[in-house]
Image 1 (cartoon, rainbow, N blue to C red):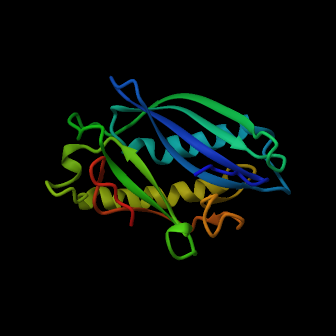
Image 2: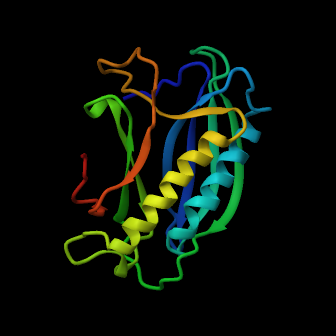
Length: 205
């Protein structure tokens, strides 16, 4: 699939690094731009979105995780014009003080929910840094974390929309599917899956 960013939308990428692992991990989603009051530029957009992620999400992930950068690709002009790139470099470290974590191939699974039914109307994100105490031997997330994430994910979505120049968080549709020409779907909620995701068991609910 080739991601096509429509005009007046931007892709957001939060790059995460696991201590001692050279491979970067990423959280991605889309945002629609408020054309009546757009951001000053792509760097300003990246700065605001990085601040929301650092405030709402980083405190609950393991302190083995660092948010190294937030990048936005803002499609100011209609494709195929190149997007405007903005980057906010960061060294924000996760706040969870646990010392023992599941391996890198285990992560929290966060669903992007919209009003559109079916796979075309939703997406998912993988958030690393699951402490051993965060789930049982079957991968069921502990009630402490499900409750804490529910609050933080709701606040994060609110804070994304509150960033200057952003009118909504969105899911980009499959560029090859039935919704390829449709307007990106606004995200109504972020929801934590009650079971962690692993490299061997990709959850696609």
